[in-house]
Length: 142
Ligand SMILES: Cc1cc2nc3c(=O)[nH]c(=O)nc-3n(C[C@H](O)[C@H](O)[C@H](O)COP(=O)(O)O)c2cc1C
Image 1: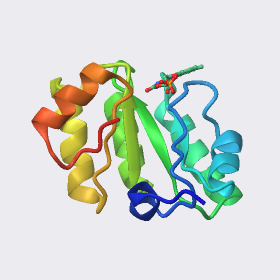
Image 2: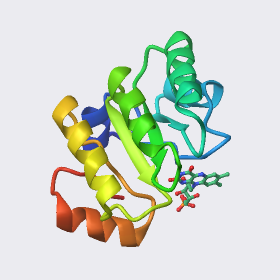
Image 3: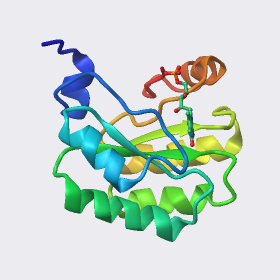
Image 4: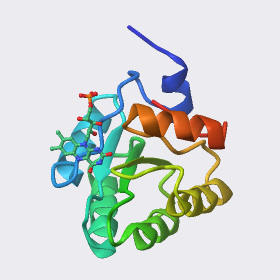
């Protein structure tokens, strides 16, 4: 079975990372992906921080496998969601819908890198990947 460095890094069976999906990346889907051996990702989208916290806790009831949270950088709640992710000690974060070179992204990165042992950020866009790679080598870009 295919095994790559991604498996070791995230502690998953298969090198498959769920795309961040607002409205669809709920605890049910995320836990199903993680239980199947991939890395499930909660889609924070524009949701309020309390919803994200609820989904994180529900996911933990549904799986003991690793999972992450996708933070949408254009959300009005981005920074509160980052706080939730840190408080809940979610180790993997992906970002989308925003320029990861912007100040808000850098704030998020600083938060997560000071709290997580993992290089946590990825980007859904080629442009974002380029910016991420330039600004910090510890970020994973894809
Ligand atoms: C319904 C839907 C919702 C999505 N919501 C998000 C989102 O909240 N955050 C994000 O980073 N990307 C979001 N995406 C983008 C996907 O995560 C992914 O990057 C995109 O579909 C391209 O993936 P592909 O290159 O594998 O097709 C969404 C995609 C879909 C289809």
